[in-house]
Length: 278
View: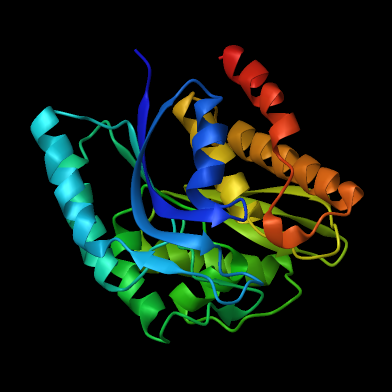
């Protein structure tokens, strides 16, 4: 039977990120993608000004209640960007409605990058997000988000001791079984650290200069699809890193405006091929 994932995220009309990235990527793994939009924006918020923002808080629980009446069940719930602190409690209610022993909850705590909380979030947002993160089976923060969740000083360079400190704090404070820490760099390389049962595993790639909007959503979407197809965490993160890096390289070589997202579409056929091997 085809697996089913609920994607809780925003829709940005222009600028490939969030749901407009997750739906095509995860679909290429042969997974049914159902969506619960948190907000609709004319563009994403990174580098654009005067964008429109339609808050869908009032619709979220109503949509979920309709699905519950239909008997919809999900193999995974993947929650990304939330438009407000109020939506945290709503998502927690929705998780309680649909999560069973067979449902995996993946939380991507989208709220910050490059050492800074996104400007439209209040300073107490990370603390308000913690209860939802504590419900997760899988957590995929970047370095900045992990620091905010654990009250750790942000650093631009990351040695193994610093990374271990952050992972230990996340594990102790949030008690999430499987962690993927993204945006880890040693100056020359960039990658992801997997943390499971007290063990860490690094996957690095060459560092590519620049800010590539939507790359975190691309990574988490590949990871989500791969895990749903029963890739091991190590296999899933390697596939996600390779796919994201290749998409960044295509975008760099095309010299496009990086605000509009990654050129990931040519890489999708590779995902379908890898998924068919499982």
